[in-house]
Length: 113
Length: 113
Image (cartoon, rainbow over all chains, first blue to last red; front, side, top):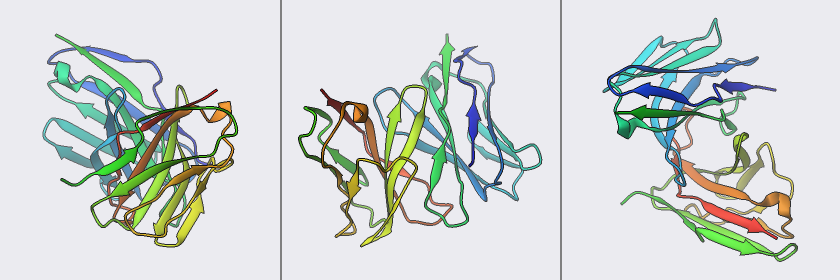
């Protein structure tokens, strides 16, 4: 079965720096990979989606890369702000038929002023 | 406002007492899904529905039931709750394409004593 790995340790970063999170998966290569943000006690909020034929996707200060050879996605937050403090989840579909979306456990980001 | 609404937000119950957590979306989404979130385990899919009267098991369906009689509603039923079902539950919906982002509710925190 598919396994999704995200850094379990919190990422502590200083305001203004770039935070980089990793999402590694095994076996089946997804057609799409998504990133979500989750604040404590709230539901995840969609941020970005990247397709298997896309190397990079950007949205404001966010950048996602997708390397199907390495089976890895990187998520970057540039010029980080304290408001970026949250847990970030990667998610991918694990079967040929869309429906079973699997999430990683998430990485907590803490941005200090 | 486009949203996924779950009720209740908090629920404390006793072992064996049947309960239903409701989920409703107002975005005309075909796809709906239930997840549970536990510390260190991340989001795990319980059941999903591709459309009305079409449901399928996720990764952890044991002890749960769902129904999809109307497009907007997707209730989660625990016929005989047990303490290991104590968790944070999220309902989500999307347009049902593999590249459609999920919209999550704000969660239901369930405690089974």
